[in-house]
Image (cartoon, rainbow, N blue to C red):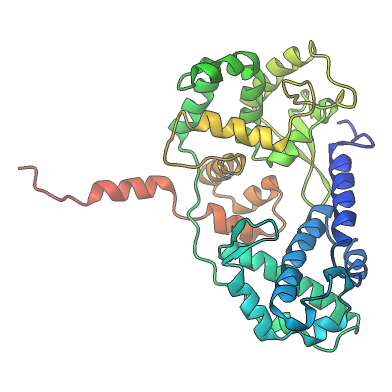
Length: 354
């Protein structure tokens, strides 16, 4: 199996995130630079950038609602502000997140999951400075996380999976305009969606694949997981065929400079983006279901559910999907399945057919 080359897709993403974080830091209190450096070895660039966006919203709230800071620029706030903020201030901030207007005048909303993430960002910041003994209290630790309502897990049924793959090949259900693109990309699209459905890899892991990350002899792909570690995922004959067909087509495409190693290419002959894969999954999924909002992650859920139903081995599912905590897997894949819910619909009779 080939090694990852230097300056891979993942390296490029990390470099872009690093530059974005540096730009964000110019708009944040200067003392946060120590925080981002302090968590560098334990978090990804994506996580640190997300923290920066979340903390920016928090300090914008403080500036807008605290007379003491209204006339100060956020990047002029000093660390003493963390001592002055109370748990009640954070509770009010959590309420504010439900519905607010940002600096551009756009309305923003957050459900309990959005609020939970933003409180986690605050807690991470406070925990760092508290452990470093730079502040003497930690009000963020006193605020409870919002209660999460159980979210229904959406996945494709076996018949829907079959119809989805068939429709990619024959174009059934697509508009005339969509068919023009489908004729050019169906081999690639079938390879991408078959790979997602047949391995359960994340969309970021899929678009980050290079040509030399595929081992057809052993039916394996080398991917980079969340957290940056490498993993080998194996695939079956259906994925093998779809990838082989695409590779035969791929060999006749001249990639743009800098994208020579990319496995999946866009129509512009550049590495395909996460957004493009999300859009093509949405386009084809609409041909098989109008009720389910299908995303690449839902294809991952479909794979995980099928694997669990076939094996009953939750630890195997966790390992294949790259979950560090098996409880995450249990929460998603040991839930009541769709077949039992369909069965429930046939049990209750409203009228006597006699």
